[in-house]
Amino acid sequence: MAKEKADRYEVVITSSAEVHFYELVEYLYEHMTLDRAEVVARELSEMALSLDQFHHRGSREEKLVKRKKAYRYLLYKRTAKATVKIIYYVDKKDRTVYVTDFFPTEKNPQKIARRNR
Image (cartoon, rainbow, N blue to C red):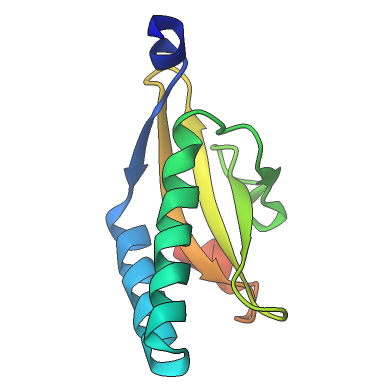
């Protein structure tokens, strides 16, 4: 049990990621049933928080490869045609994962670079 806890990283949702999350949740409540919107919001949150143990499972974010930090993402499929990228980077020294965005992939992908500074 102690080894399992030692392997975990802290997950920090940045303030800009929190804003993007709540904007997305607001959109979900307007365009989905209440029950489905709540499920999607909960699953997105759980997926982001699961990075405490599995932070290396995401793919590299190609729109951010020129940045100093190695940005990665997890892909959450919210409908058959719409997904959300949970964008993050890992600070190994501080054992912290920083979630920087919840990006709906139907938006212009060029906005990823502007939203993740």
